[in-house]
Amino acid sequence: MSARPTSERAASVPASAEWARQPERSNMAMLRLMAWLSLRLGRPAGRVVLHLIAAYFFLFAPSARRASRAYLPRALGRPARIGDGYRQVFSFAATIHDRVYLLKDRFDLFDIRIEGEALIRDQIASGEGALLFGAHVGSFEVIRAIGRTQPGLKVALAMFEDNARRINTLLAALNPSASPEVIALGKLDAMLRIHARIEDGALVGVLADRSLGDEMRRPVKLLGTTADLPIGPFRMAAMLGARIIFMAGLYHGGNRYTIRFEPIADFSAVGRHDREAAIDAAMQAYAAALERCCHDAPSNWFNFFDFWNDFGPTGSAQSR
Image 1: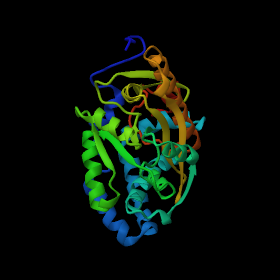
Image 2: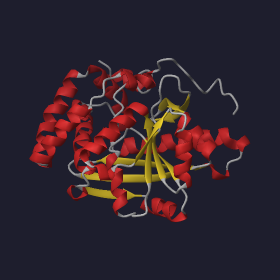
Image 3: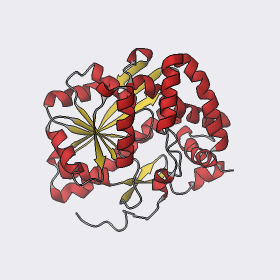
Image 4: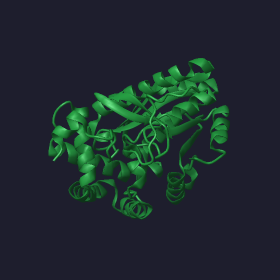
C-alpha cells in the first residue's frame, strides 16, 4: 500500500483513543445489578431509576459534558440547551438498560422498525458474507432483532480484546443461547477468523469509529468539520475483498427503535492499484451514513470524549 503521510496520522495517545483510558461506566458489576433489578421490577419501574443515574452522570462527569457541548451543536444545527445534553445522557442510560431485555430476547417489549432490511435479506440469499460497520451510536444489541425475520442469519462480532471478554461474560450471564462468536481484534489469528466467517456466509460486526493509540487514522468530513477515523477496519475490508454495510440501532425514546442498514462499499471487484481511492471513498461514505444518524437522532451519539481532538468553532462557542 502506498504511504499517505499528509492524510494519515498516528499518535501515542490521541484524543480518539481517550475512550480506552476512561473507566468503563457500563462495567460488569453495574450491568449485573441492573439486570437483577430490571428483570424483577420490570422495564417501566427500572426506567424511573434511570433518571437518577442519568442525572448523576450529567452533573458529575464534566469531561462528558464538554464532549457533549462539542458534539450537539454540530448535530442539531443550533446552540445546545441543557435539556439536549440531559437527553443525550438519558438515551445512553436507556439503551444500556434495554440491553438487559434485548439480550434476554424480550423483543416484544419494543417497537422496532427496520430500514434497509432488503439489503440484508439479499446478502443472506447470496450466500456471501460481509462486514457490518457500526459506531458507538444508539444500541448495538437491538440489531439482533433482525434475526427474527432472517432465520438464516449468521453473525460474528469483532472487537478489542477487553471488550470481547466483557461481552462474552455478559452474554453468558444473561442468555448463553444467544451468544454469537466474538473475535478479539489484535490477536494473530483475528484476520483469519474473520475471513473464515465471511467465507462461511456470516455477517461480521465491527464498530469502526474508534481506534487505539497507535492505529493509523485518516481525516474525513463529519458534521461540518474534520474527524480522524481509524483506517484499519477499511484496510481489512479491502484486504479481504469484502462488502461493507453500515448498521445502526437508533433509539427514539420510550420503547421505539429503528434498525438501519446502508450499503457503503464493495471491495470484491477493487484492484490493488485502486485500493487506496476505494478506501477513501468507503471512509467518506461511512462518515456520511454516520452523519445522517446524528441528524436523525442527535441524542444517540455515545462517544463521551473529545472526538474531534479540539472543540473547533462550533464547540468552543458552547464551551464553559
